[in-house]
Image (cartoon, rainbow, N blue to C red):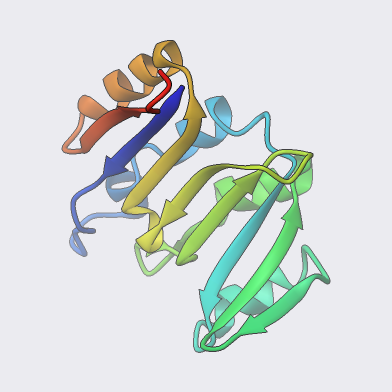
Length: 148
């Protein structure tokens, strides 16, 4: 077991969302089915993203300069995250944390989707992730746990 860390290049403002976030739909289709909810973080001034998220949950809290939302994953919310992720050519949300039913965090998306961490991943699953993200301009590596 271990984790896979992915660092993607900065967003190119001259390109559209699907070009900058080439992995987004594939990620939701193949790597998120085991998660039951997400925690989404937005900066307080990101009012468009905040207002939209309020339609999908009533569990919101303020943490200093950040608003944090817990959103249960179901067909409706998954469709929202896949189909309505773009704002001005970039990902709307600063951080997204994917959780299993027991509350364990499994996938982290940071910095508006430019950094991803797949936690508690087997070496075999890591190989698929490394191959997928290596096809593009991504710095991707598997880090084994010390017990591995």
